[in-house]
Length: 266
Figure 1 (spheres, rainbow, N blue to C red):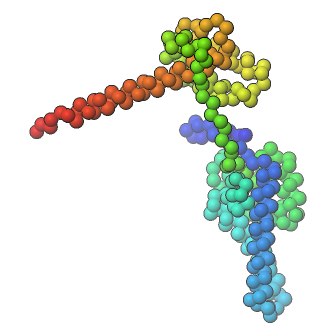
Figure 2 (spheres, one colour):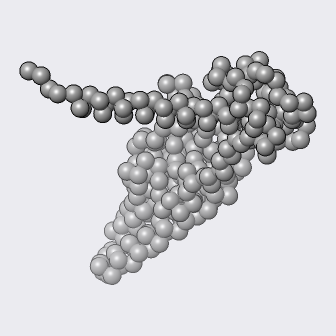
């Protein structure tokens, strides 16, 4: 996974496509282009059976360029990096900065793609992609693009909860002064904890609990584990924020109703 920082200081997590996904999408695209070429050649042979040899070679060459270069470039340009193979595999070609590709990028990919995919039967594309961390083929390296995974499985959302043994304590705890940054790091830990090694999980939970403890009073009951502490504090903080929002909405609705009952004066 790679990170892109936008001009608004927002971090975007982008997932480059794996070599297998890229290979599958490429094979589907090649199959479509080759079938299109064969269909066009058959149509030409039926439409002009008496064509002389020189004209025939010119038409064959034109058909090859059209189906294997012009069509892929046009499709990627108009669809901003999508093709039938990429649609089927959930991929999209983007620039190295995460933006949509333009005609220039599609043209470079198409011209070099003819060499590395068709002229070398895919050998050059495979050789380059295997030694690139984003599975880029030569056309991507020159164009400054790569293949991005768009269909990413949704991760399960883990909500903080209050353990039963901490409900009485957290109900009277002062947690209103917890900084947003500290709460955000603790929330991210809860979402990622199940992926961590036990030692790292325990160490990070303890560090975050100590950071929260500087803003929460009184201390939790003896024997409280760091993870239970994090869950309880974040859950209660969320519930109190929701309650404040509900009270604010109720006050606004009440004031609005009173104003509507006031008589209009001229």
